[in-house]
Length: 133
Image (cartoon, rainbow, N blue to C red):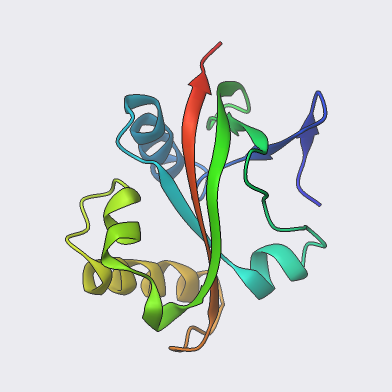
């Protein structure tokens, strides 16, 4: 299960180090309003339920500190091949659309040991920042 702080699930973006710092900064800047995970590897394998609309979570930085409270606005499970251009752009990492998003995410998830196929279930989560401590 994912860690909880004060009863809220935590969201740690990417992998520790440079990637997490960059992604967290994008959230704090308001540029990144979405994130994606693998249904089987990130939810089923960890015994974690999908986010729910209206759920609040704490964004955790690379040092383990809470840097923002977010509210989930959209949750959708789609095949990897069907992640929309709009969602790709909402990830805030400069993707022009699905193709850019897919290349980067396939490489990232495969480097972590996951097999990515067009039918692989991806959890697409959109959120808004409510507050920063």
